[in-house]
Length: 270
Image (tube, rainbow, N blue to C red; front, side):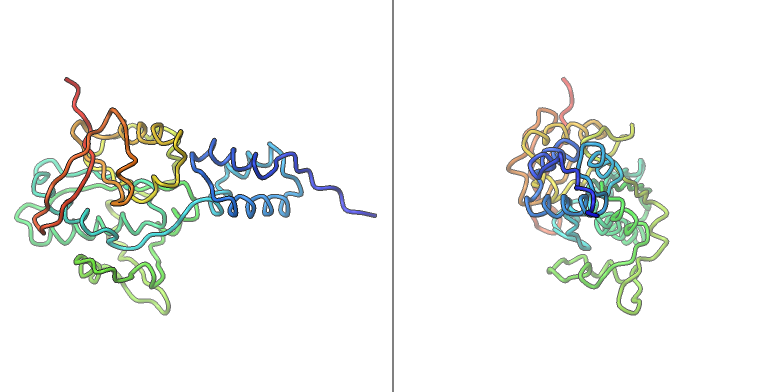
């Protein structure tokens, strides 16, 4: 008696096309092959129905999305955020951390604001909504437990801010649970519209490069839709050159620390 044949109506190319359709990304061919092998082995079929189930459940994200992140990455953006905080003493500040991976960016933002508030005459109220498409990464963010690699020293002048909020475990580090009071982590696909909120600043860093050209305007539109008029969109230092959208304009500023920052600002209708 022989095993039943594997149903593989979906080949490698079709699976790559599905990745772009569902997630908007131009997936690495090797990652697509690994995902195809995983589906074939687990479900004994690689057909449209099974692929749809794997994509909708989030299983595919573990193969196709990048999880590289660490605390206070690209410190120039944190310098800009610190400079902006005095302007929000009366109103508070609402921040979105998009494609947050395991959560280091959201916690870094909270650490910076908490550090600022400890010495501020008037502390700034804040809220952070942080999301990622990968359910496993979101669960890691909620747990707040990280490997030493997440605390790498890249020369950031803000690393000292992490000291009061990170506790050493045996082989890992635990973020202080008090930081979670102002952060909401959730699963979301950037190809879909975000919940109807408005943010003063949206951080969307070092993820844009993984999206296909035809998906980029749609993703930017979804982010811009939840920005306040005049709100700020912060993107990775190396990826801003490829950003084009009628809803935002590029700006330059110099932080109090002396660093130059390029960012995007939502245009105000005339």
